[in-house]
Image: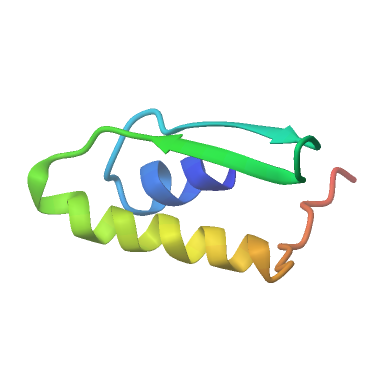
Length: 70
């Protein structure tokens, strides 16, 4: 959800980013995340940096406030 908000709505750089992932416990605990999106050549660096910043903020446990439904 956040990826779509930032890449599509804020930056206007892509239409439909996709995220998939998985977790394995054996033989050792690890996880994998795949992020895919299409963009024009001039947006590649900007969008790539933004995706890495979003991943970094998630790894650090950064959370954004929830929108109130009241």
